[in-house]
Image (tube, rainbow, N blue to C red; front, top):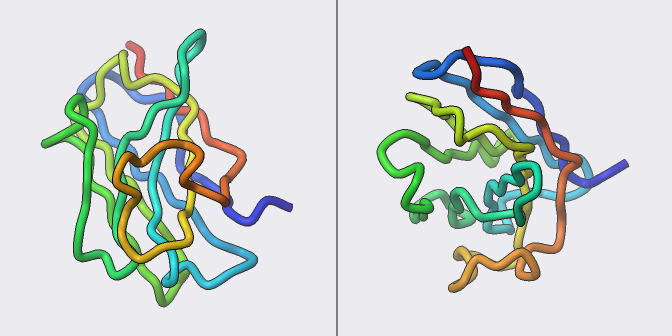
Length: 126
């Protein structure tokens, strides 16, 4: 069993919304910075958003700024990604990940995150 488990993916029309959730099952998420990544077919996995351990700082990749919002509920060991105004280019497998530090890693590279989920498919299509 992976330490993180995503849910909430699915098929949505362009312009629609989805909320992804990620639950930590083997550790207390509040000691970790956490992020969302995505991987489209034939492309490398890329960072989408990151949030510090206390939720005070967030970072977004340029392509999702103003449309996606990352949040966390440490009491529930849960991470969220609210995705609005979805576009076909948002289609990908979305992964949550945790980094054992208070703030998001400076470069937010994949190697900075030690715990991963199995991914959830998001498809944006009419």
